[in-house]
Length: 356
Length: 249
Image 1 (tube, helix red, strand yellow):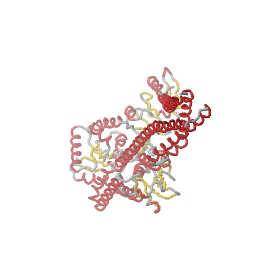
Image 2 (image 1 turned 45 degrees about the horizontal axis):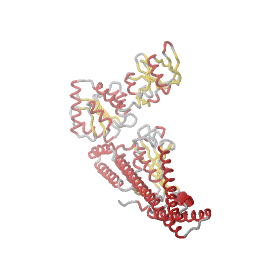
Image 3 (image 1 turned 90 degrees about the horizontal axis):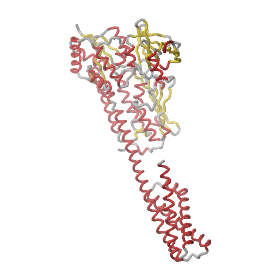
Image 4 (image 1 turned 120 degrees about the vertical axis):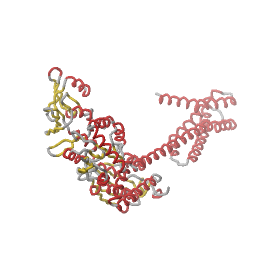
């Protein structure tokens, strides 16, 4: 309903402001000089119409091209120039045609007066409109950018919370409390690993992209702590392609996937058998985390399902690389589930790695 | 006589720590350790400990499910690293719980409290009821049910259950061809099973709605439910009216 009303309003405004008003202005002005109001009014109408046609053509064919310009001031400048040209051209064309039809001579003075009026009045109308529109677009752009910044900040905060999983932290502290008595060296190593993990999380919250190698060593720290907690029951196989190690990846994407596999990929006897595989394949780096647990039919693997850390990773991947790059979850051979991350090479330059 | 204590935790260092700290506390005898929920159920039923120190998050059967699986649960001190749900439930029900990593003093205090409570009243099972109920109030319906399969404990996914009935005053869980007797009441199961899937067909039967194949009119407004397994369960007249609302037949 409101949409329909809005479009009706636009049509009325266009008719009034862009066609009738200028036509009346021109017709009265020239009629005052020539004393031939019918002819001058019709000529005015012809002029404003021809300008309007040129203006629409501009919007339809030139505008999309203008939209693609990255510099805003260039965009505005070109649009104003085109608008001016349309007015002069439209006015001259209509004036010439009407003079032939109605048989009046285009007096140089009258033409100049008319043209002068055109050149001054029309750009003021259109210019104001354009400037207003331009301003609105700028505001909108700012709003969208702000929104994206907020979203990114929220994702980081969520990721931060997910990493410093209180359950994991307190269990690890409890493990350390025991290891201090039974295996001080292991206790020391666990404290060091925990510290490394926290450092990575804190640094990662400031950096969007980190080299894959850093993400993998973060995962190693995490798994070493889990191994101190669960011992033999956690087995990890790594198949890492060395050429992919420098690849920039969004920070804190792998560990939540590995933690998910540790929590939900347990075999019936409680053991966890993980394989972490990274390889370059064409123009992508493919990272796969596979387990030997109950598999995806278990339901906890649904990417959309909350609380399992998968959704946040999925969202961040899609926002960073596009809709086609979300998490893929599949059955693993011969059993279990596998989560696959694909990262396109060269979409985000190496230069964006590191740096605060 | 010392208090006989069982430790249940899936993490070996966590069990070792409890064992070490318990050794310093007077009047406590450690009778064993279980590394999983299923092992815990078996050991509780065999050893009948005076107290169980029970971890909550464990694969397979978690701490609450262990309690639910045991017919007459012994006094329990729950042990957890962090579990917002559970902690709130404990606070409401004034059951003791330990947050890892707990101090030697805190553990000693929890044990002392249990000893005192044991001296006064013996009814810990009665206090566990409200705890489990408040967990189910928070949408935590039972997902798994532990049953005895000869000498072993078998953990059923509740979706596997076809129906639950009473025969000779014994509650029986029917899964395909098998029938497992369990020591629980139907009313208790009714509140713990998700009503979206499980329906009390009459005083002596709960059916899994996914298994209902036919509703056959019987005498005086009562009906029979024929399940996909071929089993037939009576549906009382009063419950038929409720089921009619749910299935919209």
